[in-house]
Length: 265
Ligand SMILES: Nc1ncnc2c1ncn2[C@@H]1O[C@H](COP(=O)(O)OP(=O)(O)OP(=O)(O)O)[C@@H](O)[C@H]1O
Ligand SMILES: [Mg+2]
Image (cartoon, rainbow, N blue to C red; front, side, top):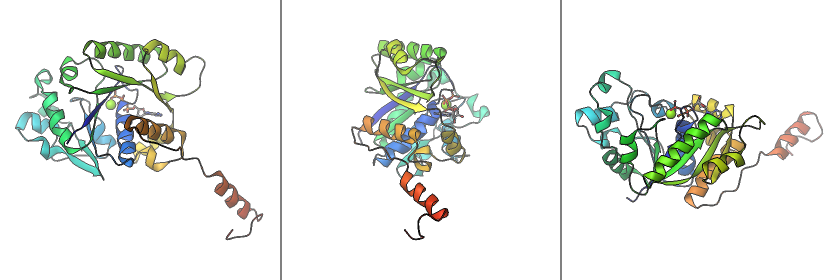
């Protein structure tokens, strides 16, 4: 199966890569794509927790130290959404040398299980991971509106261009209007790649994740969900019409409640 490889990278930690990997994966699956997700952080992986995949029998760690195959650690968490969990056992980690992992092999094998392979790239610079990205990998840079996160995204962008890896553009996450923060236009001017999406700061996104769900399922008409769905559509070359909150029905319910509209209308 021919896969698309999309990497979500930021440089700086904590800007929302793992959340976006999951939410974008769910959004793309709603457009009918078969998704595989992988967290490339061997030490501090979160994708297993975020996707609700706690305590899987076999993880990538077992593949790396016990010669198990990727096939044994591909888990379907929802229809057409698969996750390759990375494992959290520190004991096993002692037997893994992160510099000698063939990420390319793991990614190629894992990609057999879907059409779009989403990769959550750990913060910082890890030569072994960057070298292991398959040919044709498309990178989404993720940043917040703060100077440190934009500066780190810029460093990563420069690194990718040196490696001839295609950066599609950047996604501005946790955005809110504040004159002390960098604006989307200012960030675009610094990074010199297109702004692909602006995802608001939204506690609903966190609440959904706490329930092991994606905001695009929990609250479809929120600006956050619409932004993520639109990003998925743009990446897939599909059309998406934003889902507006149904204000009329809320108003009608209110009118019925106060007796302005008869019941059943
Ligand atoms: N748009 C958003 N609005 C509000 N909270 C968000 C948003 N995006 C992510 N978060 C929250 O921010 C926190 C960090 O997100 P996440 O773990 O996805 O970041 P990360 O870049 O993967 O971090 P790490 O470097 O630790 O891997 C989480 O609690 C997540 O729920
Ligand atoms: Mg993460």
